[in-house]
Length: 601
Ligand code: GTP
Ligand code: SPV
Ligand code: MN
Image: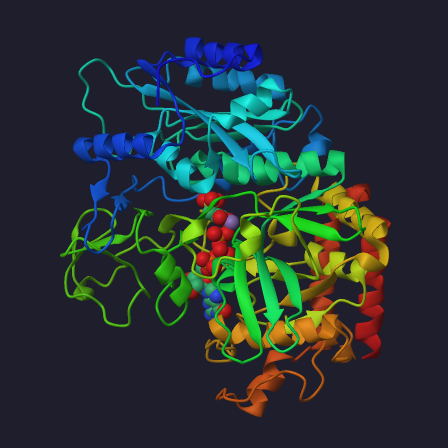
């Protein structure tokens, strides 16, 4: 970390200067991503009381941050796509005219970093020099954001060498929006009631104000790698997706498959990315848990990389019994945000252990006992940890330059009813229809009412940087391009419930049973049975031995009730209608064909 300018590139220098003159910081630091920088920042933050150092014998080099209670998740209603034309943002995004938005933002950013240090973070999404890699700079006044970026992206001055050589880069600016007067005492989690998360896809810029939390502040993640990158992908012929990425090797044949899966926020991507099979025959290795960039390769197949370098994972529900791999990943070098603190300086959250500690300090810093009857950790509390600590990391991670070839794509969501455990699409177009019609119950990862059912096409509702209907069209075009080399598409649902509200499917490691069927279907080893909504496992194809599952539960998991599906088709028609004539004709044809199949089922 230095005060000296780190590049000869005039565009970078001019950009940093222009931001400096607007936000008026006290100091300017050019970050290098080094361990020394990490140590300096963590020490400063611990001294300032904005990070708590955990017990080094239990969690070495690990820290706890507690956010302000009004800054605990992404803010979708304050997220804007600022394209010149409103139609290019589409009806599922908040849109603002770029000039008008800048006019609104400028007074907010004016002097926003007074009394604070401005950090310039050079980062690469993907390995530096890689064929699919993209570059960015983030300016921020949050040392917490700098530390998290160290983990989540490849922070290195080599990025400047790439920019100097002429590579494209994305400009991202972040302020917590809490200038400090001379002598004013800082709060542990500075932020502003007013929040703006703004994207300018036509000029490759992000401006984020008022929040220090997650995707609002780590601009490499949702802002760049999904919203801006989805626009780059449309323009350049690739896909930026809210998908985990795994390698699955058949231990008998040694044949390796690669699977990408899109589930909405807090719907099990991290869990599936670290799947520990409960059935023999498969070795599952991790490549990514949140974002995948997919590109057609020279051989005509679809290749994917995970552009990130770490996990920003949901803590609650992650435990020895549900995700032992994640627990092993978290041995050290981790930043925890909004989890509870134990009396011996470790962390705890609901679901971490079956036994609940008798005393904790909760995520807001208050004493807590089980009798308090409120969660000790915030439901959207998270861990930030380097992907390289994952015991199940696939070798391809290190050489994931041109990516891994994708065999299957999964779409999932949280659905108590209707959606079967697994169904294969009849073809790519039907698969795009499945992706476009995903609904899911809201989780704590978004602000709003948990449990409320909403449409979340491709798990990209809050992350698509352009008109969602055009995005569907882009997916259809990618299918045309890939032809018979296209991955097979499946829909999954781990969350179906019985009449008493109990999950019908054990989930977690047992999802390997579903993956087994999926990959045997990809290999042509099983045929499945065609229902109106897609191809499901035929009797005996899904490996269920060892599960205490009654036949009526299995039937319930695959029950397709024509009446409720037809009602869902009516909702799909209404949903598509919001996008007017931008909806690809093929999706309306798919809807018609589904109705026909349901009517004759
Ligand atoms: P983002 O990081 O927000 O994009 O989410 P994610 O999809 O990576 O979510 P994650 O894997 O962290 O899952 C969050 C929640 O889903 C936790 O509460 C888990 O317990 C729960 N979960 C994950 N897999 C399963 C499953 O197979 N069955 C059930 N019932 N719950 C699951
Ligand atoms: C999500 O909400 O999908 C996340 C967490 O992955 S955040 O980075 O905060 O968006
Ligand atoms: Mn996510």
